[in-house]
Length: 289
Ligand code: ATP
Image 1 (cartoon, rainbow, N blue to C red):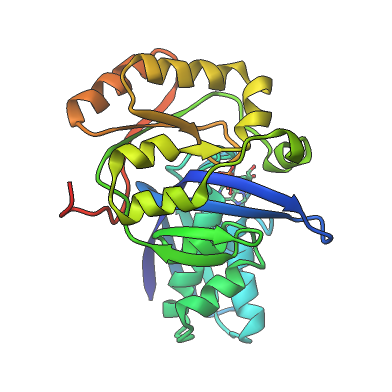
Image 2 (tube, rainbow, N blue to C red; image 1 turned 30 degrees about the vertical axis):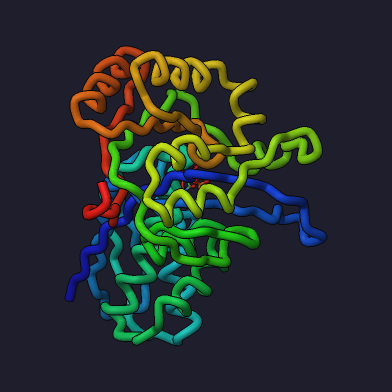
C-alpha cells in the first residue's frame, strides 16, 4: 500500500509578534498562504513497526531529527499502530529558508498516514497533533490560507487571496528561526495591521493586500543579512508590486499581477540568486480578478 502527498511551501503575507509568553514562546499573529512549490512525500506501508526516512537532500536528516519522522512516530505511539512506514521525501523546497519545508513534510505525513494506517482522524485532530511537532505544522495540515495565532497553532481559515504571481528568491545563507526570535526587540518595532490584511483578502483587493505586506522579523534579519536587503531592492527595481521576506527568512518574495512581469523579475534575479522560483498561490480566487 502506498500514499503520495504534496507538501507545499508557505509564505507569510503578514507576520506580527505580540509578546513573549511566560512559557518562553512568542505570541504571534500571522497571515499565511501556500504556494505551488512542493516537496513530494511518498509513504509505503511496512509490516514491521519501523519508520524509515529516505531523502537525497544532504541538508535533510534521515533520522529522528526529521520532522516527517517525528510526525510518523507521534501517530504510531499515540494510536498504538502496529505497522511501520517508509517515507521518501523528494525535496523541492529550499531548506532553512523561511518556507516551512520541514513543517509541510510533517503535515503531509500526518495526512498521508491518517489514510495509510486507516486512523480516521479529523483535520482538526491532525492539526492539534501537528502543534506538538512544530509551530507551523498545524497551518500546513490545512494547506490553505489562514490566520495563525497563539504560537502559530490556532488556525482560522481565510478565503483564498487575490490571483497573482509570486517570485521566490532564496539568498545563499540560511537563517536560524530560533536566533531571529531571540534577537527580536519587541518594543522598538512597527507592528503590521493584521486586521487590514485580512480585510484585503476578504475583499480580494490585490492592491491593498500588497500595501499591507509586513513582517516584523525583517527588523532582525535584514540588518544581519545585506544580501536579503539587496534582493528586496532588486525585486522593487525590476517592477514587483510588493516585496517581503517570508518567515524568519532569508527567502524574499515579490508579487506581480501579470506573467510577463513575473518572467522579467525571474530573469533579473537569476543573476543574483541561485534559487529563484515563479509560482502561484494555491487555492487562489479564480473568479475575482
Ligand atoms: P520555518 O519557516 O517553519 O521556520 P524553515 O523553512 O526556515 O522553517 P526548514 O526547511 O523546515 O526551515 O528546516 C529547518 C531545519 O529543520 C533544517 O536545518 C533541517 O535540518 C531540519 N529538518 C528536519 N526535517 C526536515 C525536513 N523534512 N525538511 C527540511 N528540513 C528538515
